[in-house]
Image 1: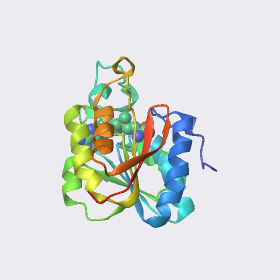
Image 2: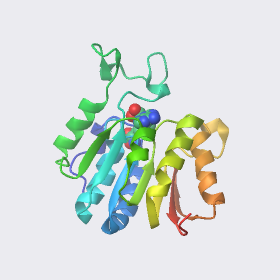
Image 3: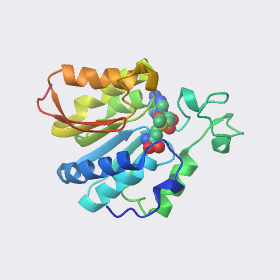
Image 4: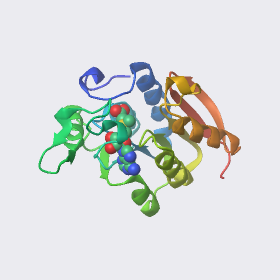
Length: 206
Ligand SMILES: C[S@@+](CC[C@H](N)C(=O)[O-])C[C@H]1O[C@@H](n2cnc3c(N)ncnc32)[C@H](O)[C@@H]1O
């Protein structure tokens, strides 16, 4: 893996071993078609998956409204005042993402799609070879992401989910719940687990 920039310079919540795992699986999966991630923030995961797409001649659609999740809002633990847009009175991580993509020379490989995930998923038409879910972590948003995007994942396509914490003491449950839904559906087999990242392969169409 030859990343174009140092991932530690990009704001975000992904560990390096999780990023390397994303790269490895996306590199292979992307040879079969387009990739998407739900939840991009400032582009840390997009750096890994986008580099994999670059190396495989594919593209990554990076879906985010860029207004931050609940935990990114003022007063919450993961609020970053540097990302505050005073005129809008709202968080805006898009300028930071654009900077990441420009520095990494990934502007023709990672295509930002700016809007609420559930609105975008309803209009989506392109089959996906790789889907990374790391968007809103409430039950409502996690379920919307699972139900809205998994139907677009091709057979043999890979589903990666971040912040999967089997022990509630380690973190919120919704990503774990959708990971369980995927396994219980009978449509997926687990390929790898690294820290809170899980990578599954679609083994049946529904
Ligand atoms: C945990 S961060 C993503 C981190 C990123 N994958 C990384 O590696 O740094 C979650 C992101 O999901 C976005 N988000 C939350 N709910 C969303 C929704 N309903 N639609 C679109 N984006 C959403 C937030 O704006 C935030 O940038």
